[in-house]
View 1 (cartoon, rainbow, N blue to C red):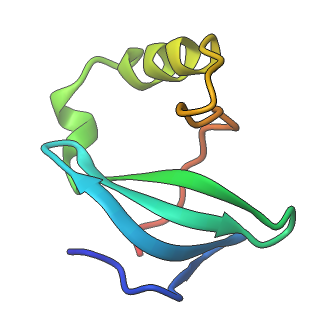
View 2 (cartoon, rainbow, N blue to C red; view 1 turned 180 degrees about the horizontal axis):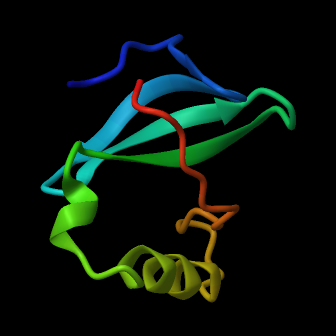
Length: 83
């Protein structure tokens, strides 16, 4: 289920859908506190049941070790209630 542009999730405002796959969807969003664009990954319902407990942490660690203008910088993992 794609979120509409303008939808707000906490401090993030959805701009557009970037991609979708088996784990969920990735959106271009704006961090409204810092005024910058971010990539926001939202997991599909049940996605955590399909991966090991450390999978997303390892993904975050790997992504945060990369530095390139075309790769989004990793900020922080967060969990929220079902929206």
